[in-house]
Image 1 (tube, rainbow over the protein chains, first blue to last red):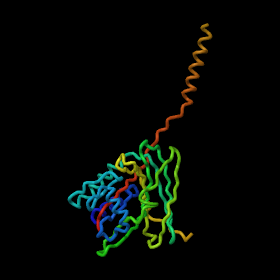
Image 2: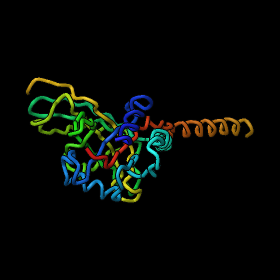
Image 3: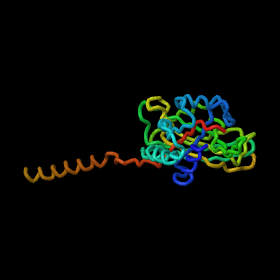
Amino acid sequence: MLASQALDSLARTTYGDSVVIVAWHPYAHDAFNINPDDSVWVAGYQHNLGQPSLVLDGYLQLAMPSEPSEYYESFDAAIRTVKSTAAYVMLTATGDADTVEGRIVVTLAMDSITPGSAPTLYCIVTEDSLIDPLGGAYFRVPQQFLPDRNGVPVNLARGDTLVDTLTFATAGHRLEKLGAAVFIEDASGTEDHRVLQSATISQFVLTEDK
Amino acid sequence: MIRKTVPLAAALAFATVVLSCSDAPVVPVQPTNRRVLAEMVGEAG
């Protein structure tokens, strides 16, 4: 778990919500391969990386250091590299949930859509603090894509703002442990499915059943 | 004749100024704060 600990530590100490983390568990023996259909699909989408691997903004596949002690510095340098690219997309996400339903409100504005690109909105509901049989804790484990892994194509003119609400059933989930990762990706395939902007919900606002 | 050409030149200059002002102003778009999507793949639980 050392690689994910290094990433969590960087998010906590240096980057805050500037880093949106999703921890995929695509392997068959993994207890947290909760949604195998999607997790295996994502692993293939990311070119079937080894274990563990880190992919930033959908395109930068990090060469994992041979020594786990080098994870922290290596991840830090890679995040800074990706973060230095200008982002002309504004994206925010808020969420509330009750024992029946969770709701994610996404607000999006873009400078312009590059001809030939296909900006697409993706949303992944995640869950924190999953404990394995040995007592190890895992965070930001994907539960499901909203509405599905194909995402929602985005089409809006400069100056327009898109507000979309995505919902999901919360039965069987620990509401206080739920979070979400939201991102806009160029799904045209011309730029290796590059992520244009991301947002995170670290915790849902808990409400009474509606 | 000289008296008439001077106001005409001034009028043309004024028209040029008005026309150039009628173009939409160029507003530089500032990039927003990039949030990086970090996908960790594969550590077993």
